[in-house]
Image (tube, rainbow, N blue to C red; front, side, top):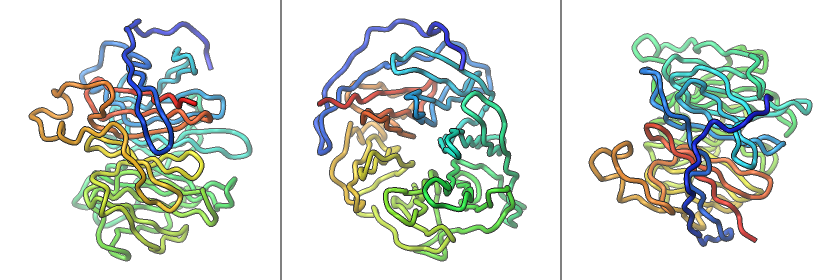
Length: 322
C-alpha cells in the first residue's frame, strides 16, 4: 500500500450519541470526505465497505478510482480500480492473505483481487437460460472460506437481473443455481449474501430485500429456514461482531440482531425520509439518522462503518464507546 497525505477536504465534523442494546456509539460524519469530480458514467454512490485485519477501512464507490482505502485516522492510504457499477464488496482470507470479492452490476464483473488490486480470479456469467431474456447484474459475492472449514465455493447474488443465486467451486467452475423456489418462495432482489461463520457449519444468508426477509441455506444449496419477515423492511446485507448480526436496511435504518437472529434494536431510524420526493439523492441528510444504508462493516474494536446508496456517496463511522 502506498502511504500519502489525504486528498480529502477538511470539513468540520458533527457528531451525536446513539444509545443501543449493544452499547453507546458516537456518530461521526463526515468521517471522510470523498474527492470532488466524477466522470459522466460514475455516480459516486458508496455501495460496499470492509475492514482488513490491519484496520484499513475499504470503500467500494462508483468513482475513479473505485476502491478507496483509509487508515484508522481517516487518511487515504491507497486507491485503485475502475468500476462504473461498483456494488458488492466482500473481504476474505486464505492462508493468511486477504483479498476482495468485487461485483460490478452494470458490466457484470465478479472478481477477486488483492488489497492492492492484483487480479486473482474472475468468474464468468453463469450459463442459465433466464439470461436469454434478462441481463446479468451481480450484486454480491460470498465465499465459503476454508479457514472456517468451508470448501472454498463462491456464491454470487444476481439481485438486479434474474433474481438468482449461483454457485461456483473454488476453481471457478459453475455448479448450480437456486432461485428461492426450493425454499419459502422465489427471490425478489436477493441483494446481499454472506456466510455466517458464528457457528458450525457455516450457513449461507441471503438478504431477499424486496421480500423483506432473510433466507438461509446450507453450503450445498439446501434451504434451511427464513427469518425477518415480521421485523425487516429492506435488508441489504450483513456484518457481524461476535454473535451480534448487523443488517443495513435500505429504508433508513441499521437493524441489530442477536445470535439467534432476533431483533434487539435499530440504529439511526429514519424510515419517513424514504417517502419524500427525490429520495435518496435529493432529500437532506441528518446527523444521527440514516437515509439509505447499503452496506456495513465492523472493526476489531466494535466500531461500525456504514455506507449509503446516494449520489456522491455517504459514509458514517459509529464509534463504539466504553
